[in-house]
Image 1: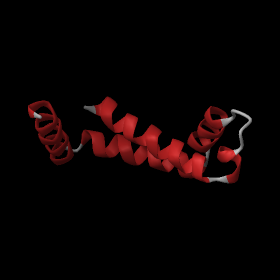
Image 2: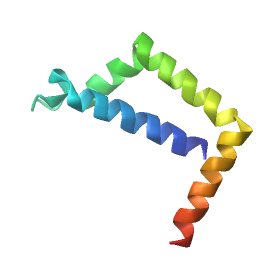
Image 3: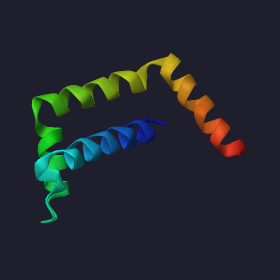
Image 4: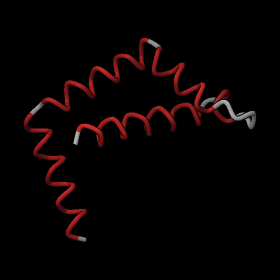
Length: 73
């Protein structure tokens, strides 16, 4: 469950970097851009927010419900 939240954070960072000039260059530096973004102040705030949300019981129940729906399909 927590890994799903971290996966969502990674996807967010990847999409953000891909939408920037440096992420859209074809020189293959997307991972470098993601790491830089994660280490930035904004990235650290996003990581902290995900950690806080991962420990919130209400959010955990929502994630469990979403996972259950996906498994039923």
